[in-house]
Image (cartoon, rainbow, N blue to C red; front, side):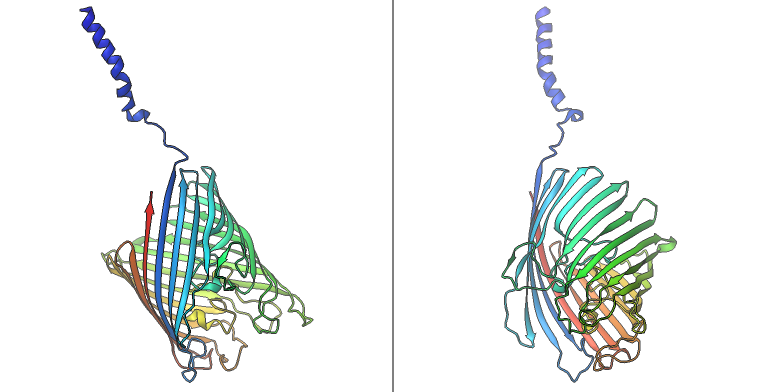
Length: 448
């Protein structure tokens, strides 16, 4: 009897470790330094045509037609839950066929190069070339306005302090007029904006309240060393600018929501060199508000009505009252109108504007989304620009937009966009303008 009991005891001892090893409660802890790699690429092709966007005059031949080819490639290493390292390259070349222009390869640049690291569960730091978008991009979205939609990066440090569903970010930005922080291949000396820009500030994102989202921000910015000649009417002397603002999104009953954002600006602009004038104070404002109603049916239709406004400069005062778009010179409201802003202040320089908006959205199928938008556009101040382009009124015009987005697969998508603007008495010309774009993009990524 003793021998069988001894054998059973030995067998139990031998089997015990195996049983404990299979117990999920004592599974080995995940490796905090495990590296996961992601590599990807994207090819985007665009056809764009526009006419009369600069002078509203059919007599002048300013019709443009071009094709844009953007190639992006990136790699990212994620190190457990500690952080990540990312690098990305970008090239966008363009062929203009009207007027006929020889095709040339454009420069290739680093679109991203950053390290993101968690110092503890509530504090993280991202340092390097990175994209930043806060809220709807009203003050912070595009750090490279001069290169169109090729890139939108910032050279920045972003320190985040988080708790529950909210966070505060300390952001520092340095964006020179030309890219000299990282190598440029086939360098074309592109201007990324007209001047050098530096900024730092705080951005608060609050999501702890039910059905309410709150953002708040304060920034200090310098714009200096304008690359244009002092004799140029659009030359901007060095300026120091402060902005303080906030945004709220409130979900309401019956499928309604209310969104509003407002900001004020103050600062100083130096006197124009050689004029003997004095420095000027800056006092400007900007904001928007809209109500949206979503109908709970399968194709998700919604109706949005709102207003957008940015102060204009009153030439009768010694102050500068025109809104400075900070880091938001991008086609948020129109692809056509950013070209019309060139004779005023510069491409996509949103200022001196009042727009009433009505918009309809719908998704009749999983692969198709539709949008129709109308803007009644005015200026808050007349503009003392070229009398060949600008009139003495304040109505900028009526704009109509239609867009269709198609998703063929997770990798292949495209869209078509048409914009039409009938000018008002803010301009001398009365001939309508249009913008038409077709886009197709293919992307892939692999994680291993």
